[in-house]
Length: 252
Image (cartoon, rainbow, N blue to C red; front, top):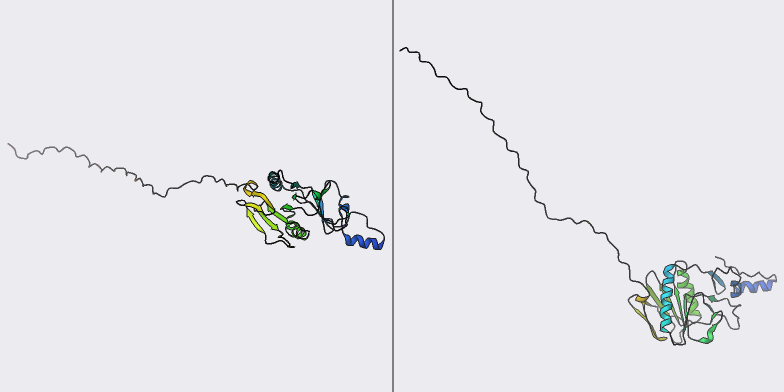
């Protein structure tokens, strides 16, 4: 991943030192290829990977539900690639070194919306984890949104089917302990009184495993059938010859 600025490095040593300390700006990102999406956080650029199908399914469902929830209210829902600019004081959008593209944002202050995106912290930021961005979303962006005062930040995990909710309490500068919700819960927010997100509408139920019927064996013993032994006939006695009468030796 490239980490250098896209603009030509100034030849003047003082200007070059300022350029290196400043880091990459949004104006530098405009020089990237049109088919690439880049973010820059504290002057460090990050290339965004193409989202997965699971990622997009969750994003579409969340966007649809939030649109329904905020219908008729000043809050508006935007999805990527709508960008968020978080410039320092007196910085223009081109000069800022902080520009991110969250998966979803909710902006209730119309004054923050410009043609190129949202200038300032949205009321709600949602990041959906992907294999390529999970570590950055949960570490770099979590600290980044906390630092710039994003009042509510959700981390959605399509694999575990959970949502971790981080909130800034009134006057706090750090997020409190996250609240975890699974697909059996509803997300409610004190910042959005009418919001009650049923996660069963976002995460599909787990697929049931289809098992092939297994052969059943009976434990009952099958009675053994004894084979009848063949009868053996007793040998016949030898036939007797007919006896002849003996002649008498006495003469009459």
